[in-house]
Image (cartoon, rainbow, N blue to C red; front, side):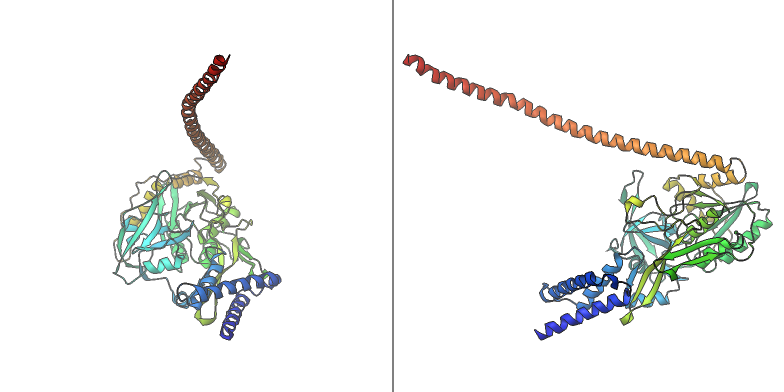
Length: 496
């Protein structure tokens, strides 16, 4: 009994210590919290003493901690000692893997972009694909980092991936397994070329440590070639370093203009990022291309240029991922990655989208000035062309051939070169959006009406069957009544 009591006190002390360490500002609701902690300790104690198999208390408490953190959002994470150590040592610059940028979307490990020239790209993985299994291990319930760890491995080793892909009806269908040989991933970050009418085109793969230098070199070369207009393509760009996003924005914005700011619950988490020096390219007319695969740093740059009136944005609403995580060490070598603030554009728009609340599906992200809806399959064809045009170190510069139609880029060029005004393009975009919405609502009503008709037909069919049977039953009852009446009447007549 004494040891039970000691065990209970130890568990309670551990839990209180954990809560006190992680949430030192939570004591305002101390009474309620303590009641819940007592309940937790009771459950833990009962499980430990009565569960059908012997349990490991440390694992149970670790699982409970993960449950607490997972309840917050998709980006906060409790890190086991092994994971925390890897996070501290992770350079991510050169590793053996498949070359996929991933994100958790609707609970699934989802492909944001396969990197050009990598095993994933060559195998035909597409943005939006959901990864279901890695070497037959189910990753649908895994944390993103755990799934990524399964995909990494020694260069030359093999791995099998099972994915599902959305079809034209919006349904996800499982495809045959993809088999890969892991390679050393050294991603290219910038590609550029001159388009007709002196339009410079610059595609950024991501915002890594050397992105800014590569962009500066590309812009300088385009300027030498006579660039008068610029298209900055951030489609399928999942982001990267905040410093990279700020440095890119500084190339185009005037001094003392807001790029982005962070805001959390505590005043010290408010931070502004502004320009200081004169920009290298203050006047060049500019368009930014985005889509649902544009996230994080891409959204910071596009939002800053849009809000400051420096560029117009063309494409589709961005992914909506812009939150600040702080990593803190915990006892025993574990760590905690906790969301402490969110990013806002200069005009105060929240970039982060709430994917857990479906009623807020139209909030967050960067909405383009001119929306151009592009079928995912067709957009993927445009993107896949980069496999042939991105320069690979040690190989000859490939021939630049583009055959897939790109209505997003075409629309941006039309506006930049004056073939259509921005105001007219916005008007046409809004009209097209209204038509799509009306069609969607009409289809929904038609579908609902069709369902009602089927239910009605089914109900009428059942009623008809019932009606057919009813007369027979009524007739039987009437015949029985008549027969009974005749039998009763006959004796009366005889009696008379």
